[in-house]
Length: 172
Image 1: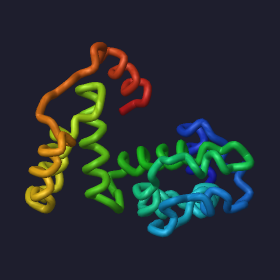
Image 2: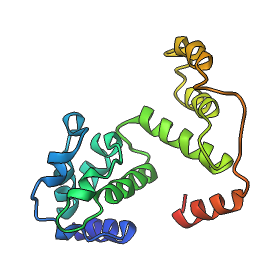
Image 3: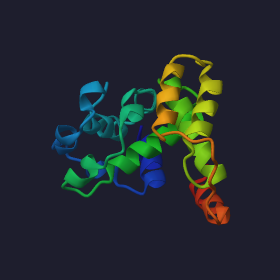
């Protein structure tokens, strides 16, 4: 039971055991309405060692990473960082509850890894290949191109070495 808590603490750099369930993180969360576990409940499940419940939860993928929870925490727990750590741990298990969100996440991160920033067209092409949902929202593309919201032009950052170092340090 405690092994999960220790692993989350070590990987996130946070002390999850300091949470005393004040609910401030959950009360401020703008996407709590769509979560199976609220932020304070996720933290409590980590404290209790409920690895499978946490890593299989919908909430870790719904989190918008807005950091409202972190800002509101009276014990200075970076809850957004903890949730990001839980996402990484969930990816490692290959038992995620949200395959489409995971596909989007991986597509976004690949684009950043290889270009140094997001490229919407490349990211969406990769996402569509992963999900095999090629035509679900294809009707949106012409209007997005017309408004200049999508571009085929690829702009890379000048020094991809720095980006590679960030990914290497993150272990991804």
